[in-house]
Image 1: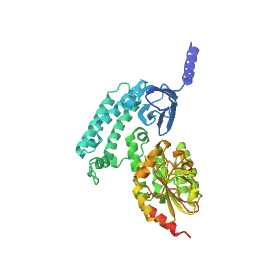
Image 2: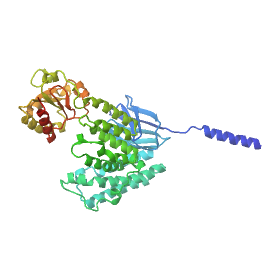
Image 3: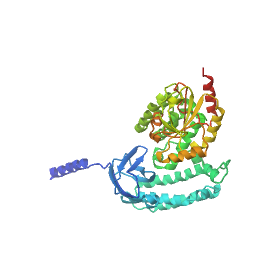
Image 4: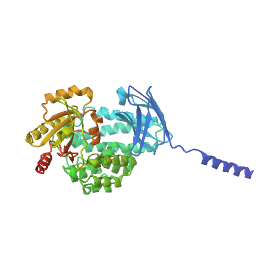
Length: 461
């Protein structure tokens, strides 16, 4: 009998050891009235794309990295989710009324239906932004307290919710309030039409002023904490860089090394690399190497390497990429080769680009100043073919000067891709020999453009 008991005990241990450990969650659902072909679940350390079938359904088994908060997106629409290992969640949503129709069922639905309701609560409270952010400091804080109380009551009413979720979300509600206080000065200045407004001395609590940027869990779970952390980390860097980002050196970026949250450090570098890893900056290589040594996210590293590889052949003195046979608004077509012997200042723009259009008055002034000099001003539209007539009309209506061209294939034009252009307006200066002076030249509204042109023209033989 004793041997039988020992044998049964041993078998129970083996059975326990062989029981599979659940390290996944199942996410399925249906989205109506959407052109999205993929549902994307992501957080700082995880990303999974789920194919959406023609009937709007999707399903996948996800090996999530950890229990926690994620973002579920369908194209431009997204919603916050909490997912833990072992969950089997089904979501239904109508893209026409996205936030109002997000509904969850299954294991894990309790927490996520709360998050959907919380979003609607916050949206309802702040729906009239002009009125909400124009509130004076006292009434504004009272409104924030009411929002927090409403969400806390809803959280407390949950039944059978995950304990870790409850604890984390209770903390998130505090950070939500902090985030709204942190943004008040900027938003109130705009909506109350007080350009010189500054919050009173005691408006921002010490807890926000002295917020330690070392809470990795909060960074992943709270958008408000993430926003505050990004701001506090970027502000001193922007101040160090000053107005001329193309003169940035690694010395301006040293504070990045002290950032304690890996995901925050990755996000800061990704944000800065977007405009600092630029061929217009002679320090591009050292900045790239500095960023690479501080990144821990492999996808971010891959993207940075790709950006650097595209840009390293666009440094000053390198032969410029060329465009050929672009349609000329005045008739016929034109190629860069037709302008050899002259400096060429290229403005890459589009009729739909607000910042591009805002540069037009300044561009006209610069053109006028250098009218008799050996320089050609070339504006290249990357509008789609369907907007060809809109381009023609805008050139006429705004009486645009210089040479007005239309690229042959919008964003996919070879010239645009060769110059690694992923945002406009973009300005390029090419010398009379067809070599790059600056692949990211100053905008017409920047006084440094006139300085650059005058300096280059003095160097002509």
